[in-house]
Image (tube, rainbow, N blue to C red; front, side, top):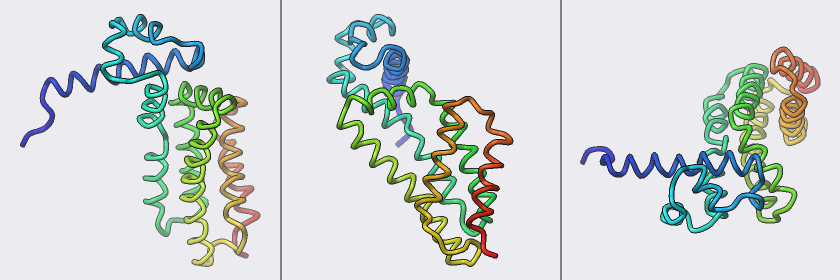
Amino acid sequence: MGGPTRRELQKQERRNQLLDTARGLFAAQGVEGTTIKDIADAAGVAQGLLYHYFASKEDLLWAIIARDNPFTDMSEIMSNAGDRPAREVLLQASLRAYQILAERAELFRIVVREFITRPEMRQGFKMIQAIALGLLTRYLEARIAAGELRPHNPDVTARMLIGAVLAGHLTGRPAEPYLAEVVDTLMEGIAAA
């Protein structure tokens, strides 16, 4: 009962290579502007091999999103937040979200582009957004209950923070000191007296 076999590891490496190649092309050309042939050529494989791993471009798109989505990282931050002070957790979460946006810029470009043209992408994005907002909102509710934050609508605070992170990223603002200033401004409005 050991780990994966050499063949299984090779298969996973090939799958990741195909996902990476497709992600780069989708980010540059859009999903509609990219063919299976384009992906196969760029990856240096036969088209038939691509179909061995993925039934369609749609499958490739959703596999990229499933593999590269940032919410595992964000869930980890929020699940380890516990009773830590709100300013510390909000700053850590916003800095990590900013870093994730930079690291996964291709994925972000794909999601934004496809969000505009695909209703199913909008629905998927709304579900992902609800998860992220839920994590942050539950933490803020706990800090309100603990008396650290004044009673307020934590959903609004969570949306403001996420919006500020996205706006900063889109406009190319350096994460520091921008996000510290955003968190300090939010804390001035929500901190208990």
